[in-house]
Image (cartoon, rainbow, N blue to C red):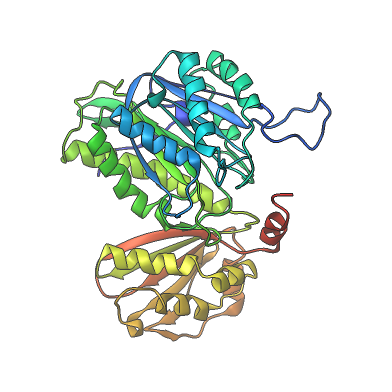
Length: 417
């Protein structure tokens, strides 16, 4: 689309009518008991001034966190209408006998404090699996969260959902539909337990564009396939992965109820935000020192391009080679070769690229002479592009990942204790 997407500040609060808040409530007891020490927020709330059409996608893991079950049930009861979202970190509320009860209680607390139906509140949690979620700190936090809701407190919310994340992740854009300015923005969390098997991590997106629930779900499902589903850090699909997309219509454009130019513009804006959030998630992978972006072109169809690109960024051996800045292109061809797709391996070309240049390492499925020194220089970058051309069509796709470092093992060796 030729529509211009202008980056704007505000994250989850960028779209008109959305406000947020976040606090530290003590879901996980701090390691430093000094009351003068400021602790990172561990719970947040965001809400719309008016009812929103809402879409969501969930993890494909057979083990699903209680918050996902409650969110899905609430959306079914409300006809995909929401007003508020409550999210906590440090405890996943998963594999607990009282998990659903606790997740429902979180929704009920918000509903009572905001005087709205509880089925119009959805809930998400992230953190350690299998530990009982304490409700008492949440009961104390909810009235404060409701009281503190504000149109510029997106940072409070973005930091509250972080676990092993080292940076907050937000992105928002402004765009036009039918001459009407609309805004769309979101926030994400995720650093480990990230693998392309749905949406990976927790992601929340809001827009003031008027879109029907049906078209909202259609857009989200299509864009998830080429963004979050093309992301892998460590090969583990979380139990609590979820993406929610809320549209409150306060831009007052003509509601999008069918396919057409307006819908394509909306999808392009959604891709702009979700692709940038995906990239941030990959770059902040646990222990990561390099962002890996694999672009597969020349495919006969989109699914083939996606499959090949994902196969490469998911390869543990390749990820380790990128950490060592070793241009071991054989590991790339190996990963291409076991991808579940049809193509002629004897036509495949491979190159490495970064801000330091580009170098071809494979042509027609075979190695070519290249300077190891030049390759090492290219791989010193903290953002590396792996360019794969199947030379078999015009379709392309991108997958995102990160290198595998010593720090990944350090982080996950004692994550729970």
